[in-house]
Image (cartoon, rainbow, N blue to C red; front, side, top):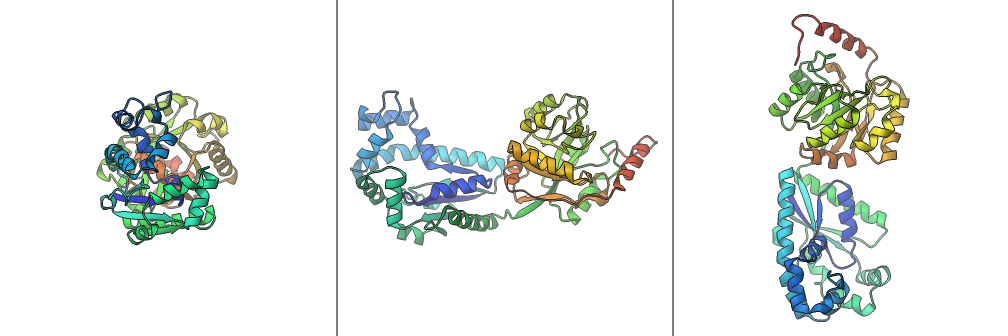
Length: 422
């Protein structure tokens, strides 16, 4: 896991960069937020601060009066150092706990936003350092005009931090913030792309909805499905057989980085709901809302496929009810041959602020590769997928109408002796 430090002097724009990266699916932790946790009411950190600085830095409701404390420490360097001696060890403990959790989740890259990285001598704890900078006169203006600080307070705050020139020299990447917010975002995205390359994340192509011989209307051998998918440039596929999970679980165990185990459940209402990252099969005929609840209870991802398809999607009659309950809405399904249901699904996802997915819905090997979502490289976990889908680029091409004949034949073949079951 590539461990990145994001730093910058006061009013440089580092928090804006952190926000851009968090929006791009990167786990970001803020030292300021950890500092707030370190002195929460009733904590040992707050008790130590009260003992050192007296009751004047505590509000009537028992919380830390940050303005009062700031006035003290920025006027007295010795007191600032004594405060840091209390708070910084707690912050680093909390940060280490956060990093451990992200590492367990399998994230390839994480970011810690730390204003006083160099002042605390912590730069050696990170693999890469990103420094956000802006002209001194501009930073002073932001502190006074945007944050409402006095000129004297702004000068003291800036003086408490080391010279930005030495920090630039000691950083791996420098982002200058002397233009517009759009300029800053573009620069932040360029650096993030470079960091992801270093982390080995790259991009991936996913098919989030397809079938194997585990489905009652499909004859495709699971191993050959995966072989064909890889040959077509797909990096990971979700096996979502109708009302069955056994094939997906077996394939996920054999190919843990290539397979997302899922199930397409025919609900009591007659519409389909997909669960990704399932561990237990959900019975056919389970009510739709309960199906989604069962998916979440397993730690899975509720995915709403083809919500405006006739029959299996109910023609959209439950779309507005189910979309808010799901994490992902399928905005392109290669087995739908009309533009209208795809457009309505895309509008549904945008209306409810949902992530966008896509799938070939393949029931034959030849359909693979027609449709996929391209996303940043990520661990094969629910959290990893959801984070990656924030940057999904959907590519879709409808399959031939003749693929439905293959499904019809599969239904007949499954009723004959010796039919494949996956």
